[in-house]
Structure formats: C-alpha cells, structure tokens
View 1 (cartoon, rainbow over the protein chains, first blue to last red):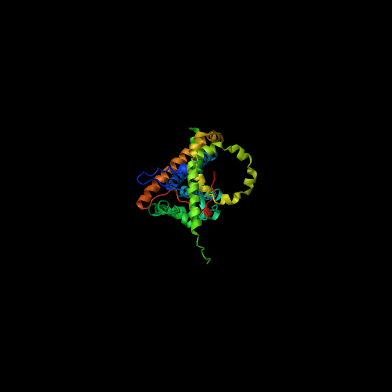
View 2 (view 1 turned 90 degrees about the horizontal axis):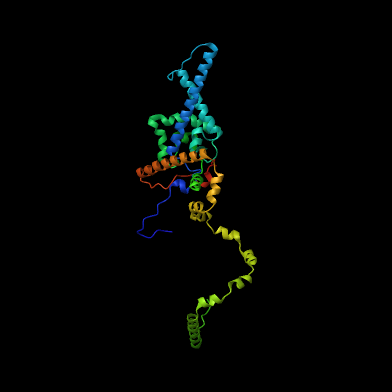
Length: 175
Length: 143
C-alpha cells in the first residue's frame, strides 16, 4: 500500500523490532566490542596464569619471579596463548566468548561453518588488519559484506547469530 | 472466420425491451428486504461443506499465496500485547541473564545501525538495513 501524495511516510520501526537479524552480516560496533571483550578476557586469563606460575615458583623454590610486559618471552607467550584462544574458539564453535556475548559468529563465506583451516588462517591474518592505522578494518564499514582484511584472506564472514525479533517480543511480553 | 449473421430488427427490439423490463424490475425490488427474508441457516444446512472443501485444491491455493508477505502484514507486537501470547513467551524465555544479554545486544545493534546509516550518507547510498547473504548462503545461526 502506498501513502497518499503529500502525507509523511510512515516511520519504520527499528531494525531489531522487525528482523531476526540471524545470518545478516554483523556491523562494526558488535564486532569491535566483541573483540575488545575477547582481548580483555585473554589478557585477564594470561595475567592470572602468570600470577599462578609466580605463586607456584615462590612456594616450591622460594624464588620470587616478576614478569614485565615488555619482556620478549612474555610477549611470545601471550601471542601463542592468543592464537590458541582465537583459533580454537573459531574452529570449535565459530565464536569466542566475546562474540557469544554480543551474538555474532564467524562463518565461511559460503555460509557453512568455519573450518579449522579457515580459523587458523583468520587468526594468523588478524594482525594484518591492524597495519596502516587499521586500514584492514575499513571493509567492515564500507564493504557490502562487511568483511575485514583477515576475513577476505581466510574466506570468512561474521554474521549475527541471535534472534533480535524474539528478544523484542520477550521485552514486549514483560511490559 | 465465421460469417456474422445480421440480427433482425424485430429481435433487437425485443431484446432492448426485455433489458429495460429487467432494469425496471430490479430497480423496483428492495434487495435488502429480499435478503432479510432469506433463511441463510436453511441454505447452509443444504450445503455439504465437506464436499465443497473436497473440491478445493489447497496446494494450488497455497501456491498462490505469498506467505512471507502474509506474515509481514501481521502486527505481531499488537498480537503479543493484546493476547495471552505475551504470557506464553514470557514463561518460555530465559531469566535475568537472558534479559541483560538481549539489552546489551540490542544496544550494540542500534550502534551498528547508527554507524551504517552515517556510512550510507557518506557514500551517498541510502541505508536499507543490515546486508545479508542470499538465502542459499544463509548460515545456520545459533540461539
């Protein structure tokens, strides 16, 4: 039905009220906040692990080990841990803890589950997106499929994996 | 091509008279009064609904209906507000943690939309909602 000429067009409800969003390409804010949460989680777990090692060394040997963030071994250890955290999460379920929190998921570009190989390639290619002031992330903002450089390299995409419309109905049912 | 037989003048005249007579009768009859006198229940009693339904090809009928269009026309929000459906949904949904997740995700999607609209303005392309892959590429989404 079309509105009569001269009438103001009817305002559209917000996207989360009219669509489930499942399977749609996820936007920048969802992806960035999920990644920030993941970085926080991985750093937190890594810090706890270092503290546990220091405590165990103190109890067993009586030596107090102190860690410095600029220490090359600490950096290498964190890089290995971060690789395991991201690659394993994407290979196992297509999402990390942060992505699960924000309802987004990594899939292959043909819509199937992301395989282990794609997950590993995506993790290795992730640092490339940060080069040149994060130029690799521009594709999320401007691309039709909202893919970053590491998505293009790995042949993956990030989609919403939660039912926004069902959430909206749950909200309304409680009013 | 079949040859058109000329209508005799007397036959055409008779037909015009008949049409005019029917018009006069129809205009003189109060159809509402006639319909009031019809016992629809008695008429329906004589109709075998099952036989009528048997004649309907439901598959053909459904093929002609755009179910997606039909669903889009349903005001689900009004349905939830005005019926017990809301209570059913509330009873079947998760607890406080689920609500917090819903709120966090909704806010973030709102931010996604805000950014995407501005990007659309910069690119001089109207933003029509989050892009999605063709149906055949639609990934299996989680809960």
